[in-house]
Image (cartoon, rainbow, N blue to C red):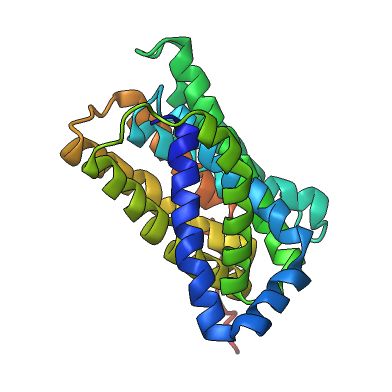
Length: 275
């Protein structure tokens, strides 16, 4: 299946789960009213948080393996910190945090590699997945400022529905000639229901409680699990540049986000003995 078809199916399945769930929990009239009040903001969020980055990552994974794609998507907290400079002036990045951000970018460069096995298409795939991380960072800050008073279930339902409607037209044009295998359809179903619907409800709940900077740190978990799953489940090789890029990116995120701080030792001045 084409990347657009996979993502459209993923979002349609998520919407089919979320819409009835929202209406059952809030009531039909109240649920529709909340979606209507959120308005075009949910459509914009669906574009920048789902339709665009999901498609970009799916396309990138046609040129790089899953572990490389996961590592390339890890710098979300770095981009959140950079964007916060402009859109949240009170959060200035300097000193060690700035060094951490630069270190993360070096990690992305190492990950892409100067001469990757997949050629320049592999470089393009890595950079496209990294660009998707920028959209995730933008959507984090946008959702935090625009939907601070909106229920996470409403946010996820409205944005998933909007993103599904955006991708349906191009997906219908690219439908495969044959019905995909049960394994492929099952994977898309798991991705749509578990990896999109319920995962995003939890994420936006975190965003409401902890804010964009801290919530984006969940990307720490993605590269580690992707490397292990790719190696053990898909027999994907683990290359040296992947390990080096992972370490640099995670170090950059940890320092750039302020999770790791280096404190100076204070000199202990000996007490002057009293006469």
